[in-house]
Image (cartoon, protein in one colour):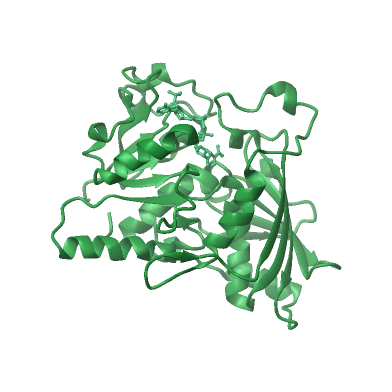
Length: 362
Ligand code: NAP
């Protein structure tokens, strides 16, 4: 049995950070080695620093780890560092880490738009990791020491949408127009301060700051291409229009999607369903530990997917698509559901790391 890779988690006390702790606690390839959070938490055992809000209890392996300040010197022994940092502080902290030779996989928005940083939803565009592979090979060929890098995973509402879109584009050709209306869980707003109970109970909040812009832009980078100079080109000819709502659900983002294909020759509803069902991602092919059994569950029940019933399919690493039907304005409409703190956040980071490991890059 090879030795497990040492993993660090930044923002370990937050909503995404707690999910990292749960998903990494018994991981056969990664060992929870360092936990970082703010000065408020640093120096305390994790169990005293964290306000634990998961239904499972705090894993014993994490309880007595002393929380470190988020400084790269504290994490030098880590083979990979997962970041669930608040965006207000992630920019400077993550820069310190990757400039000092560390492999960083981030949930924060700060570097998603950087022209040379891969923005990866591991179920659909792990090919963008080729950029990192080429950089690491070049560094190794020149006998450079530790070579730091950063990979971002997407905004949580983008993660579910791009999986069926990417599969359908690859199978049937370009999509010219997408509209998406989201119903997003409160855990997506984080814990500090989080979405106030008074605002969300008996209510829907039809605005999430910055979310629509992220969903519209990130979709185009993720489904775009990589040039010879390792820069990313946004998917062209695809208009994306998003409307985002916060609803009184704890976990799981549900999205109503309509799509129009660029070509006049359209697939049938049955062909769309078959393409989604048959799809396999790289993590499945590499037999990564956390890879879902099925990337996309196509549900036939007329009232599914539902957050409470479907978000935990394959431990939250799969997405569910339902109510696929023809659209009188566009070509097709359907619902997509994804677990926002698993495949929309911490789980995506872990699956990216497992894919890098499967390719021999960590
Ligand atoms: P959160 O619950 O508010 O957690 C924020 C974390 O950042 C906490 O661990 C906090 O530590 C730490 N932190 C705050 N200020 C710090 C500082 N000055 N130095 C070091 N650490 C500091 O937020 P979240 O929902 O987990 O989100 C984390 C990141 O992931 C955000 O960038 C968010 O946009 C992104 N994201 C979230 C989701 C989701 O579904 N929640 C999905 C995708 C992406 P203390 O406890 O010590 O204050």
